[in-house]
View 1: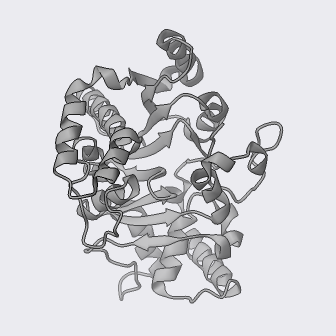
View 2: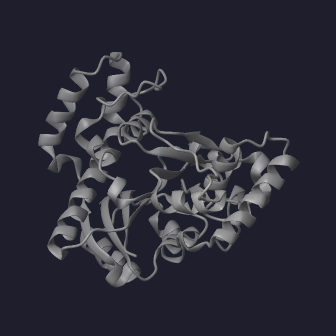
Length: 328
């Protein structure tokens, strides 16, 4: 299986997050594509050498993003903003925040990936979206693709037991929601009552169910391998998706503001809203995981305290943590 890690963002905390990128993302069959912005005093050449030292042969492309080098995109961004029916204050926010730039960096990295695939005559199996300032606190090793039907059945039993203990109604939808949102690590199953699990099905979604010819665990096995879903951590912060389903999201680099799903809220134009709309029109069911604890690393930038999440050696304090944004 071949996986592409698309890593974007600024570099201010990358030296703190790198150990987790290497430990939890890098393995055989994994390539890394970077589109990064140098907001430090070190030169691009120095950083390039550092990245190759860290990722070795897994690193196949580095693009150094500087907004002044993309005047054509700046002009295009103004055309996008001009045609968006939102207040001028919101247009100004989008113009100066990282919302639109984030997706343009993603699109640039995506094009590099497509070029590499075409040159090599292959296509990746999975895409893992990573950020320079965020970590996956557990290994992304796709172990769930190797579960047997009996292992799936046993895990469903675990989920149901924890739902009952947490006084969460046991329904086909709740079982699927918590099965999928905890898929990265069984360590989070005992934490179910604290998980802010969200399931947004696409319109053609089919819930795995038992039939005359297929057990529930067999249907769930099939869904794990062939279902149209994306696993997200805190909305659009980090995500995992099959490569053959990853086409609409990268277009936000130049189509930002022109995807508005019927189920969008009043903030459809922000980065999270545009991501969800892209998933909707790609017919991707979204399984989103977060907790109030982990969300603190995202939502309260000015109050971010490393000691809330990491010990003095940089290890995570909470064994049930799946992600963290590293602000400083």
